[in-house]
Amino acid sequence: MRKVITFGTFDVFHVGHINILKRARAQGDHLTVGISSDELNQSKKGRAPVYPLSSRMEIIQSLRFVDAVFVEESLEKKREYIQQHNADVLVMGNDWEGRFDEFNDICEVVYLPRTPSISTTEIIEVIREV
Ligand code: C2G
Image 1 (tube, rainbow, N blue to C red):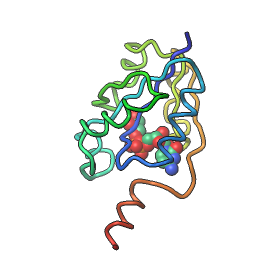
Image 2: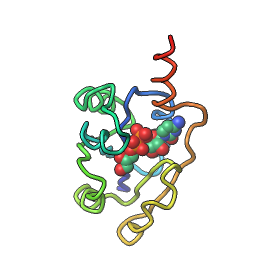
Image 3: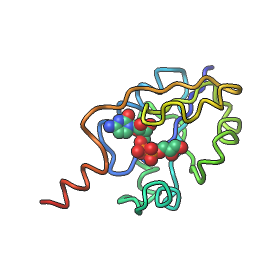
Image 4: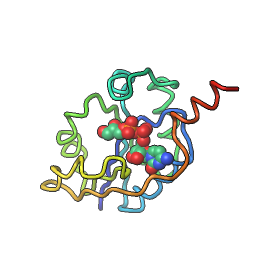
């Protein structure tokens, strides 16, 4: 079995998230998703997520092309997570292009094109203006 792993906050879930998760699953037979803790999102993006971790996990876990979820507590633990989950492939959107190449020694690293014209930040701005 070829196991795939990916990571993200997946806050204010949108079609860009669906697209990357579907394509990640298509890279293998099993998809594990590491979902950023609220604290990690705060440190990455400088704001608390709109949806708390428990809601974001429930949404992702409910998708038919996701097999397992866990909490990503630190960006520094990526090697540990890849090994713990026996991943053969790490998939990330190409906004992270090149950033995880160091894990090429333990798995294949694949960057997929982001879905254009949609992001959590833009959705938050649109709602703010309403
Ligand atoms: N994404 C995408 N298209 C968009 C928006 C997001 O393909 N229009 C992808 C991102 O490239 C990423 C995934 O969806 O692979 C999750 O995006 P975020 O929730 O923004 O994840 P991020 O906060 O970048 O966390 O360890 C890595 C990080 O935790 C990634």
